[in-house]
Length: 341
Length: 248
Ligand SMILES: Nc1ncnc2c1ncn2[C@@H]1O[C@H](COP(=O)(O)OP(=O)(O)OP(=O)(O)O)[C@@H](O)[C@H]1O
Ligand SMILES: [Mg+2]
Picture 1 (tube, rainbow over the protein chains, first blue to last red):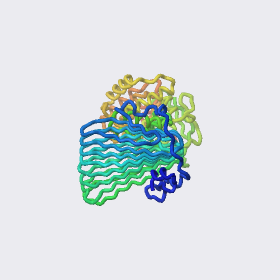
Picture 2 (picture 1 turned 90 degrees about the vertical axis):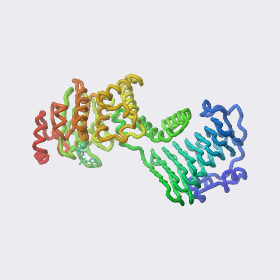
Picture 3 (picture 1 turned 120 degrees about the vertical axis):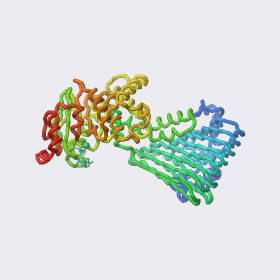
Picture 4 (picture 1 turned 90 degrees about the horizontal axis):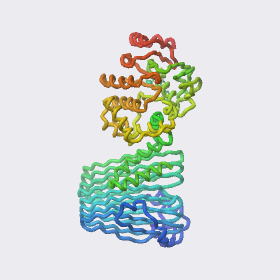
């Protein structure tokens, strides 16, 4: 049962759905009656430029599917663009492998750029050797008519550093999933997310972190803003396996609901089987602080501008944690634009 | 300047202001004193247009213009400023950014050109220095984690920068230490001018030693029940509100 096999076999019965615990809020099985035929190739003239174009050394473009392998040698440093382009109403799959050698450093600027009612699936495998560093920034701009699923598997080695921030604007159904195998051993993980949704868009940010060794650190902060009839889903699970003592794991999810018909479903979970751990999670879902808004208006700031300012500041806290100046500016811009509309 | 006539207002269906009338001419400072729960803050919120404060009768105008018909931000652009009894926290927005946004929004609403960053920073530094506010503090999110006194000072700083024409100070003195009270009062007095008026809500005569009022009013049970010169404040300090509570 997977999106991959459903597309390959053109069999909707193989799609994940609400009977799978992990997919109950993003029920593809119940949504899709027939898997569309394979997407056609994209005219190379249509590729255009990605959102991070001027920041990257080079780019990998997967247009309506494809495969790629990105390698960073020991001690080397690269800034790589990874663009998943989707065009049309077909179905396609993409597979990417990323390997960063010992002490290597990769800044991976990933974008989903879609137009059409496609069904897309992407798999990304990221391996970090000892002491490697990866900063992954994902800007997911799928089409409002599309169904798009991205599943990343990250495996860390001791002393590796992995930072990730996902920015999602939703789709008919959009799911961005990250699973991390955390060996402990002073490896550090930061995994953040932002979703800003309007119309009838749906975004699902799902993360699973498994601490398998001692002294691992995980910091997670996800923030969302939903309007109109949009729906945000956050599922975060942190598992601290037996023996993974002195793990320090913190998970936060906070969402603002700006209209009566918008919805947020959140499931933060900590499963702890080890001793002497510092683990916590915080989860809030609420409306914009109307008192703060009145205060801003009393100072002369018009209502719309005040709302935009307060919501932008709310998600800005996550954008500020991006550790790559140029990219931070771009995602800040993205947040401002998605909140202004 | 401000003219309030027979104002009646309710919160959650409960009548709080019960026919309040008040005239504050240009250039004058009027103090409002009164027992807890009398409706002083309610008056300040009604004048600034806070949601949930429903005007059921009466009028309030500023320089002949109907205040009650304007949105809170439109009133601000006309020069109405409220120093909050309990200033709100604005997470994630540096104080300096907030104030600049407010100033430029007001200028835009009045059809004036926006103030460019360097000119604004110069103005903000100048005013912060006069109020003995460390400029570094302006880089922090507005009021988040500020002490009670710091929040009040930040209100007066905003007032100094926005340069409003009608000022409402709702218990600005509460929470201030003696030095801060003097500094804040000097800040307020610096704004006194023939074109400006002020409404100073306080429980303590002490503030009025620093900010000398032209008139003092007693607000009890939703109405102005007595008015007089500065000596009325001294009398209230001695005798309390007992007799007005009975009158109301
Ligand atoms: N949301 C509300 N619902 C019901 N009653 C309210 C509400 N807000 C205020 N009140 C009531 O309105 C009355 C006036 O309150 P207000 O805050 O204006 O008093 P005040 O004169 O400013 O008092 P203080 O000196 O304590 O600041 C009080 O009895 C208060 O309990
Ligand atoms: Mg009050």
